[in-house]
Length: 441
Image (tube, rainbow, N blue to C red):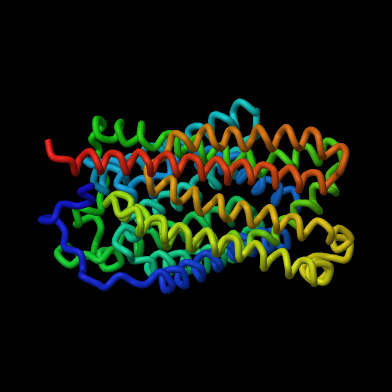
């Protein structure tokens, strides 16, 4: 894929960082970003009435699935060379169009649900704040393509810190969640325009540092090309939408069978897995470019070697989490939450088992996307969701919260097994293609 024309752009020649260095940068960036999300909710709860916090939570619940679908995982598609004729500007232009469409869909939903003007404005402002983030994500794709993971991490850190400061200042002065979210949107916009789009950040040496004067960093609109990119990436949008459902199905059955309190206990204990998940996402993002390049070049030995190491790490993270939760789960839950959560410390080891299987499945998901195996992931995720739904329906009324954990474990096993099958078949097909090309006519 010609990401930029060689004549229009010169990339500063830097030795690519090691996988360990990339992971370190991404882990720190993702950790601070995740911490910023947590602090945002905590500070809102302290600064405004619960009703306003509820408006913000409702905005997230409405905006997140829509944006996740319309994002189409263009970052992964760009990096994995999925469309040979598209340059960076085409992806940026498409992201601008899909983000605008997402905001229109969000507005339409607020009207269908008959939200009042104040709630509609809050929800739309959440959409704007998230929309700015999606534009940064495309610039992250270009940075990741050129192994500039440190710049991505610096952007995440700056964006998180400035967003929290803006939220606190705007909310404290106005006592309004709307102005607090507007402050977050403004902070994200400042980082986008001043850092993410900057020529120095992007490694440009032959262009002005200002994005508006640098052709490779500006959007392009060629609807014939973008229609093809859309068609290629649409399955990944569906996959992300299905992934959203995976996290909400257990809560639905728990609420129906056990009530709101049990939903809160289950959600809080499940947050412990997010620590391992943060490491998995950081590792996957750091290794993704290498996976995509080795697969595209037909260097399957490197592809499988790297993927095998990731799977071993995923298993190790899960086993360590299970061991720690077995030895000190009650103490951890008491310290992090409250003593009443520690009463269900029996859930934690099983949650970590399900988490370990999920970590391995996530790494295989990075592998499938790197190998351009998009459409099979739809059926795979649908099968996982179906298994989760059926096992929740059967186990939650009988076994309560432990039944929900077992249902999650079954679904992740289905995901892991299916991912292995899809990858093996995809690699076999790739091997045949390279063999046929190598044979003399």
